[in-house]
Amino acid sequence: MTLHSGEWLVLAMMAGMVLYSLWEADKNKLAVIAGRKSKLAMYKETIGFLWLPTSVLLMLLPFNIVSAQSLGLTWQNNLANWAGALLVVVGLVYVFWHIRSIRPGTPQYQQLFDAMQTHSWLMPANRRELYWFTGGVSMSAGICEELLFRGFFLAVFAEPLGVWVSLVLGSFLFGLCHLYQGWANVLRTGVIGLVLGIIYVLTESLWVVIALHALMDIFGGVLGYVVHKHGKCVSEAATV
Image 1: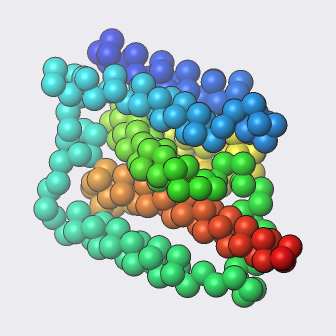
Image 2: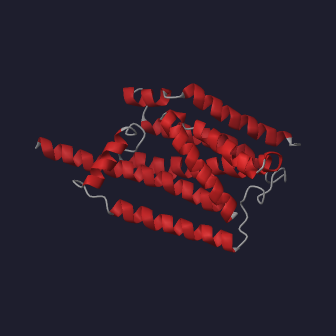
Image 3: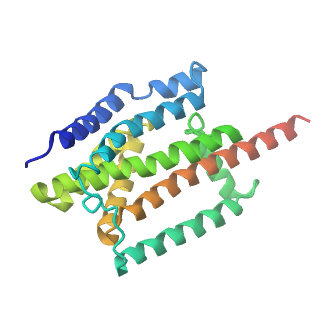
């Protein structure tokens, strides 16, 4: 496997992301819960963490060290591409419908409220945090993580290792980068990464999985914000 030094640098930075995630573990979580760090500060650090290696990767494009086609960034206007676009539209409709259907006092809301409690330290609780989470963290995660762990990783390893081994390995590393959410979520995120990788292979477009990834993260952030807002209103009403 012959790679340019720039590609080796990106791989080294990706390895650094994984090692840092293993070292950092739940330090950010404990700092936010203890009040030593604000959510906004954590969001901004996450955005920088994601864009540092991604910026290096993107700088390789003008020099033809990597190509947009090898990263899945070319729209081929074929059936696979348009099937992926349709999947994104379906996802948008589902997200909009689900958010609109949230009603406090229902069993579904209670289940959602209970599920969100373990991630309340991460979820936005006010409008400013919501803007940073959705427009900053979620969009950055969708773009950067898909470029690194799907587009670039498969471009490098699909030939020597095979597509499926590369998908599984990339998804495992992707999951480890989410150790701050706990080991259970490492497995969950790894599976989601594998599904996104399969969608990438089937639709032949990284744009599709970038959109789906960002949409999932935005969906989670909006749900967390809505649940917190409703829960706060219920709590304030109960004290009147």
